[in-house]
Length: 609
Image 1 (cartoon, rainbow, N blue to C red):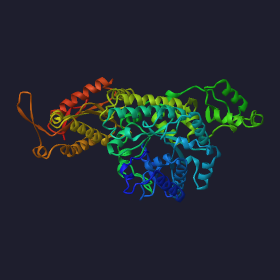
Image 2: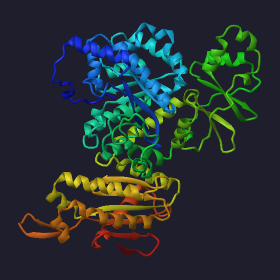
Image 3: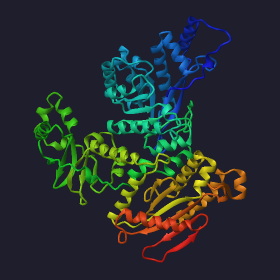
Image 4: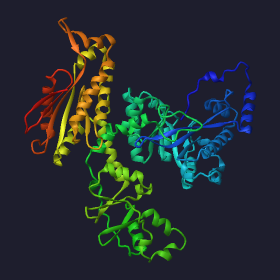
């Protein structure tokens, strides 16, 4: 992450010449007078710390304390490589001394990465000497100068990947050619520049930019890291976009001894009231693995390796072949595994006629066709990375082989669903809009699953908006959305934003009525804080209509109209939404916060809060 520096740190009552500053820098290098800080990188889905970005600081009493000042002078003095090598060593040694848990992101500029000694394997030897593994180290390419020799850069990145390192590109959206670098290097991680994260909850353009980056990442297999998260609102916006990882002062500041886990408050935001926007839509969407089935002919365990190899040669579209015995899958043979083995001297001659069960992966991923895409994606993320490329076996309810699924098809379908969810999400709350709401209702009815549709509407909101302004009005709507999320069970209930001050929850939780009452109580406690002290004291606001007549408007309240929707009385989302709208009108006739329950086959009742 590129740090922000106050240029006043360069001021000094005793001006120094350029040569004096270069000599000072040489002294810092010779004395190894640098220190490392680490900023946690958080998994937004599980609220766990997965790694740290290694940051560097110069001597605290020096104008070179800031890394910006340090590297600017290093470039001016032609000492960039020397400074970067020292920084690399100090960060790695400090990380190892801390116990070396998780991953460490190591900032390296392209020109230093392309130094001739990258082919010698010195970095690999060094990290092994200090007790680290290459899989723990992510080479974070920081583009602080134009990159021209992409061919050589690709070769260097390929070299490091072969040794086990992963690659990240830093500050996407800020540098000279970030998208070109992404296309050329195909990194494992992409860090979005903090400019696009700060204020993302208030800026539709930034929101769309980051959403587009997430879509590209889904298609390319990269994982996105949002840098510079400094407020709770930014954290929520990033979470609701489905971004994989987050980093910033709101999560944790850089520290020589960083925290191993995040705070309970951050955990509550990320997983306590989980699922918003695209993530909520994806988790509730009932598309299953059956949509990914491809009929790949299997082979028996005693099939010769030569036959399997010939199948791969004749069918270049196959990435793997299932091994099935008596209808039951027992493993997978991956194209890369077989080609790699047969490429070795004499291996085809030795093993070509032997049975293919010697080559198969017995720990292959197998899923039932009724598994949801959401559950499958979670399973793959928790599994070994190679499952994404080799694919997975799909079985029927009895465990019999019926076909294969590929990681590419899974990512493509999930991306399409996320794009669809994002396209129809409400821009203010990032909650699913009318299209996914209607789809979810129809899905529940089609599967004959009973649910309760609760229509939530704010009373007296328009007068409040007219008096206090749209910004305050937006804050009330966002607050309402947060309170509604808190009462939902993310595994069972679906929350949508119809538009304006109207929301809907499709409850499958048995205690839905208690949840609604909890909302009304919390809203009643919270909403007065959005008024002035005078308006709070008198319990409302004075307004004037178009004829100039004064009128008193009470504090905003919530009206809830609920419908017991079962598949025998309702057949489409049109019928459910019409019935919910009627129930809402009945609820609005009740003064203050209220809940009205309409039961199609039972007596209607009004329940004041």
